[in-house]
Image (cartoon, rainbow over all chains, first blue to last red; front, side, top):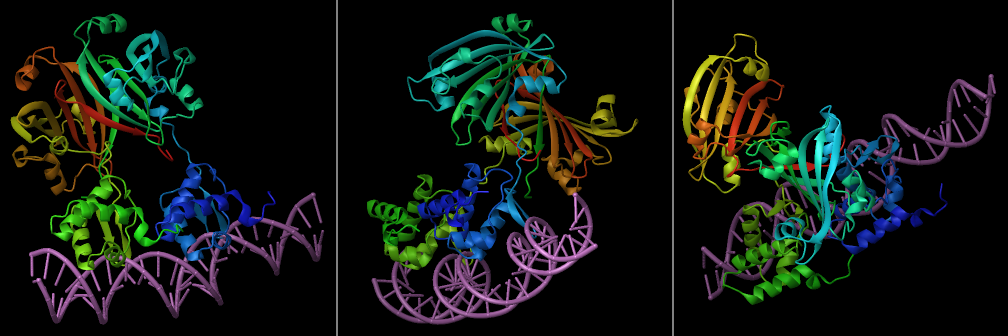
Length: 257
Length: 257
DNA sequence: AGTCCAAACTGGTTGCTAACTGGTTCCCTC
DNA sequence: GAGGGAACCAGTTAGCAACCAGTTTGGACT
């Protein structure tokens, strides 16, 4: 245990600073926002315990009422967990990483196929207009391009063409297996992706690489991945062999109506 | 707390400047426009709280009546949210997640296209083995089949082949516009769907109906829809024209899976 | 060393007060 | 009809105090 006086604890200091910086005039809203920020910025880690409501109220100089309303908001969206009699704690986030949804290797494994990979090309160069658009780059920015042939149980399944801004990844040789691991190392782990699916027909090069005939159907996925702050970090076009691959999506109705 | 005098707050300064610049002579109309601009230019972020009507009125030197009329206009188109007793806040954008279950008509409208439809065939008959599997039917059960050509702005977009168990829908003539409306009337509204996407090439009939060449790429969606209790109510195969249609999916790192 | 119990926590709830906010009405001027 | 002003109603925020009901903890007892 640290022997800091309660008012000196990192959390208290963080909250006080956050409340001073932007106050909307509605205390419990601001406090809820500050707590949320403390969690996302790891001032409060998952499983950590909050000070008691009374102590917290006194430390940041608001009423217990306000502290409770703020905490209630966070409990409402599952960020905090309250237990009568025990202290309130930050919820354990069993967050399934985005890579589980977008990684080719994990996708293959979940289908019971052994993932494999062959490099087609790796290069750094100036961004094309389409890449500038997709990655929100400025004109003249450079990008890193990774082109791979993806296989499942040894059979060619897809051609993957990944583009990453050069300020995130300047050396394509760094990527040996997983692009996501490299991005995570550099603290650019994507948490959200927008994917556009369309159909196309195989051209000469596609046919040669995927061992299919020219004119065979292809499923094209264009995916843009974003970090938590909304910055695009990856733009990937994947050409799946339409005869060997399909794509599963679950849809849910909205609450209203 | 920030120590800005109320009249010095960024919002107030922004509004005063906007009102000075172009005043049409109709105060509440100008103020509404200024507020709208403040929101679009992020002077007011989503979730932010407005000053009270009285304070705002005093700060920009108009009457509370005018402030209220301006706010009412923004509340009307959903930009602001008012709660009796609590302050007025900028609406959180409830942007519809792309994983929402939508009908073809809604989908087209959200793309800014006018949905249209032509019947190809309507019939009731014994379920095929594939239909029995997909809809969890018993052997010998009957199904209702609806085959439609779907258009967007008059252009053929997709061939839709919907299959519904006959105990849900026994007369295909009942469906005039929306199949979902009919299902909702019968309390069989689907709330969840599993959709499989793959690529294919257009055959002779597809090409004729969609006005595309044979061999052109098609995006094939096989969708199974379920009601709240998990009963399958619809099995639909849709052949989208690959050149005119694409499919957007949003992926997110998910909590507590 | 282990058990047990009570004190000292914790969150949950209620009642009250005061100040503030949007909702409404009525009156007035231009 | 737009604009201003005032008064009043009803709901929310915020703070305070007291008390209830669980959990934790440590010390007394065996």
